[in-house]
Length: 151
Image (cartoon, rainbow, N blue to C red; front, side, top):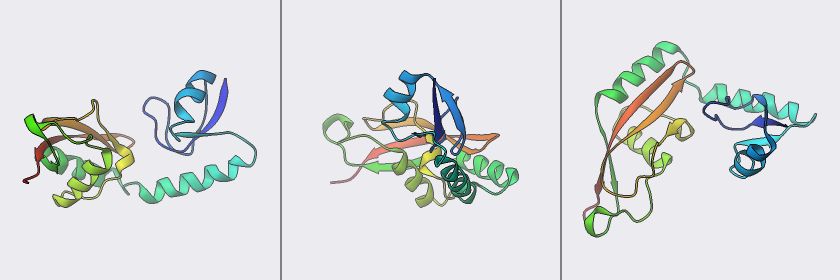
């Protein structure tokens, strides 16, 4: 078992700043290479406090604010314009940062790209859904309309 400090929120494991114990293979092959965690050390305890402080600064202040934002995000679809080739195939994929920027551009509020979860890679134009974790107890589903940019 490996003892780690989470640097990002990992679904089913914990939030940034938590100290967790996971199997060695999960740590070595998934969490550490992707930058989701750091190896725990006595010096790392100082990092835990700074990670928690940064997470608190980014977090939505109250449960009521998170619920209001979730309601507005679920109410309307967010349009993402991307470069696409023949047949609607994208040049690349839609990333969580693209979704966060589109939400802000649509005037629905500001969300952190780290809280966005995309269940599948978006590689073509069409309608998709993404989940946003706004608060510990509040998640919202966003309807995405991926459209090709005009040439």
